[in-house]
Amino acid sequence: MAEKVRAGLCTSLCKIFPSDEPQASDELRFSMFQNEKKSFQLAVFAKKGEEIVWDMRSPLADCCRAFFVRMIPAGLNAPKKSDDFYISKNKTEYPDLLVPVSGNRYMAEYDGQNVLWFEIGGTLPAGQHEIQIEVRVGKYEPALCRAEIEVLPFDLPKQTLIYTNWFHTDCLMQYYGFEAFSDEYWRVTENFLRTAREYGMNCVLTPLFTPPLDTKVGGERPTVQLVDVSVTGKDAYTFGFDKLKTWVEMCRRCGIEYFEMSHFFTQWGAKHAPKIMAQKDGKTVQIFGWKTRATGKAYRRFLAQFAKALIAFIDENGIRERCIFHVSDEPAGNMVRTYKKAAKIVHENFGDFKIIDALSNYKLYAKGLIQTPVPANDHIEKFIGKVPELWTYYCCVQADHYVSNRFFSMPSLRNRVLGAQMYKFNVKGFLHWGYNFYFSRFSIRQIDPYKVTDADNAFSSGDSFVVYPGKDGMPLLSLRLPVFYDGLQDMRALQLLESLAGREKTMALLEDGLSEPLTFSRYRHEDTWLLDLRERVNHAIAQYAVNQ
Image (tube, rainbow, N blue to C red; front, side):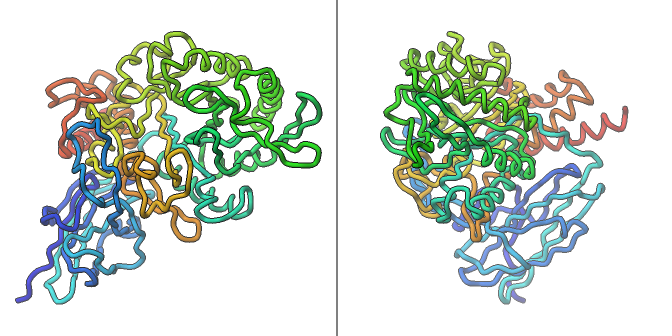
């Protein structure tokens, strides 16, 4: 009798390497809501080049998408200052890219474990459902794996969290080779934006002018300025908003709700103006940039005129309550003087709008320089209970103290746990700087994100992007994107339970079994804890809903 195919199912929290010993089970059970997405994995032991064939039998089969999990090279695994909650800090590649699979067969790419990722989504029928997957490899006896899925007759509530993951259209331009605002620009931008929205991003960085982010001093990024500027005299300007209107309409089609206007001052101190191009004497010229003193009279006069025109556009298009403004990204304690002056200018012109900045120094916030600080999740404790609205972010530096992040080298639990943490502390917004940053640090050169994943040894692999540029201008998912979305769904499920059972009972369930209260740095480092928590939340919702 032929040997049986070695195959098994596991949750989306597993990161499986080809050399791993088979640990998946032939059975899996979980629950979900009718409007939710859930993923699970099928690990199949095969030799490189062997054909893996699977047959799925289930009432949910038409609601499943299949992907192959591809290993991607890693450069920098973790910064020097990092804790011990990592898969590894020295692997040369990690499972990350989800390659869409059409049909029911795929050629094994590795000797050892080859992994298929299945995502269930859509409007799902309520009830108990079984998924049976028969797996065949060569002449081996087929393996049969089963998943028992309970679709509860409820919908998750609408996401209340404002979530922005900075969207870099210049990186798309450079990678695909099209011009700004060409037909191809708008087509590809919309493709990438639709995927971002599908996985929870409801706020988009909107480049009024080319964003002054991650740019070498004196250098520049490709121009993606949405506002047309004309110089009509000394310190006199007119503005055209046709491109911005096209952007707003595109975002609305994609389901984007909030517009995060790009920063009016350069990063790390607000010393200069962003690159601003204009028509002057029949030519396109740069009128502001690195040579511009940020708080000088010329730029102040420009911003005052621009603010009036922009606010009129905002009101005409009915997005006043959905616009967010910035001063300068990540000011430090030694930058108080320049940041204070820049913040005053922005508040003078846009004081009726929400103004936020990534700012983790509480002493800076206490000086009254910004309405809504966005502290990193390893500095957020000082802000809890002291700000009118709590936001947070993480980036390449948040590698210590066990805080959540999304590096290749981190367990997926560390990515997903943020949802439960944000629920507990009533976080209103989450910011990350890299949805699709395909440049080296400081935007010095274009990189190939399939080969260079650490921005030229600058940021831990996985920090600078969560989607890959696929063929025909379509984004490809990293497994980190749906895992993060699972965290957002956890947050919504907890909010639903609170609406039924109240805050006190929801918090008791959330922290049941923990040796100490949940914080941004303290939680159980076990997949089963978070998975079991979500199951308990789901069934508590069902119980309270029936009793009401």
